[in-house]
Length: 157
Length: 452
Image (tube, rainbow over all chains, first blue to last red; front, top):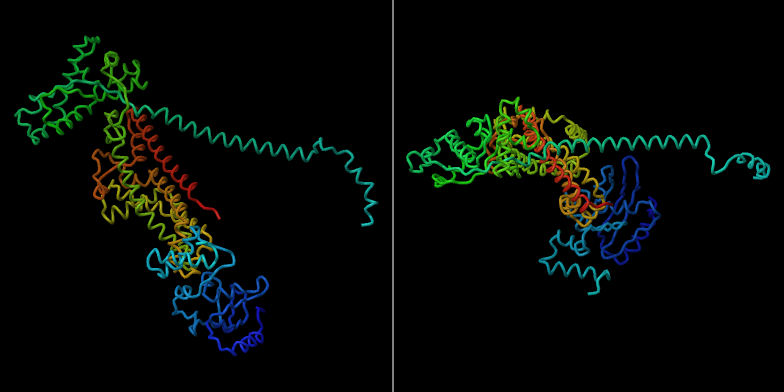
């Protein structure tokens, strides 16, 4: 993992400290192994609240692997193991006592390859709010869907 | 590189004798081998087609006549003097009148008809005249009277079954020559039948009771039907569906989505694959030992047959369901988990609906396999001679019943050649059911299967 060197990260942190933004997620010395093969080497990063943080790097350098660590999507891969510490609001997301589903509800993920459910667009957008009970009734759900699509400029209404 | 010019002169010499129109020895050998292989393949396919065609023609040829039956139309006077001596139409008393009391009514009616029409057959005694009617006919008559005692005293037209030999005469099974050697029929009786047919009294027509009537004894093949067998098979299929689908799908989902990969799940997987290859009669022994001897369930009952066939169908369904679940791409699960669905929500909202066509296809194929299964049913007593219809489910599944393939087996064991026709007819019915189920499976697959 040579995505970001230690010094660069520190420089970035120093820069941010000026306006003291709140740290939302933090990775500390994250190592990821696929079986015996190590894919990430000691990644440490702070991700601030209400900011867009971009990870840039060549293909295969571990961007997606790191992202999948953040909401434990790597759990679905049997041979994958994660070392180090990742926190969300100072709570360790790899603590065995936390609820993975709750974590993923708060840390959403959009994949590199589009993988919509083979259903209507409405159903695809409505699925998240529906299973988390964010909408009371059909009208509210429709409003969420239409709003989201409008923000994405997918709907003209 | 610079040597190209020195190679150039040799090139024309190597290709000098070659033309695209002349095949080399090697090419010719390859081509002959290919032609030979193609011929072998074609012959193999033809042998297969011929075998199936031969099988089907022989079954249809033998069996299609069982859908028709010879009947005699008779006006029968339901004589109160014979059936109800007290004259009070008391159902208790009528129940005590046996089938034998109805025989003279039929014989009298038939003799009267023969006299009225002026039919004379030399050397035919009156007793033999009555014998052209099936032994089942008096029982039919008795059932009719018991269902409606008020009809006693009236003259009613009945369509009664002709005896099996008479029926065989019109189906080409019995000839004048064979009748001369037969204890059960004489050429004179056949002549009488011909006369009656000419008078329009005796006719061969569609036989609905083949599908509704229960089995009949060796001496009355003309009355044997598939009613009890069809009900028994239907009950068993219902049981198999209700038990093996939920159990099989639950087991597959657990193994495919939740179970950790360790030596125990490996062992279970190997065992499931092995179970699918276990000879079906072994399941019969298991059913006999566990469900009948240990659990004390009744013999010949669809409940036991259904349980045994469920055990037999489960591996098929589990294997098919796991394949269907595996075919759903992991990106669907990732997408659901990525928006915060729990594992179970991901499976039940997305994976299972997408796997459903595959699961249903596997289930129907498994059911069709169970429908045609005979061996395990023989061991749990389904070969018994059952004439009583089983009751309605759920109690009915504990009543004795037969099953379609077992009925076929049973009829092929009987002595009377008329049962060969019955057995072939039953095979046709079974094949129609199987084709119907397989057609549904193919339709489902065509209609709903997705490919990624």
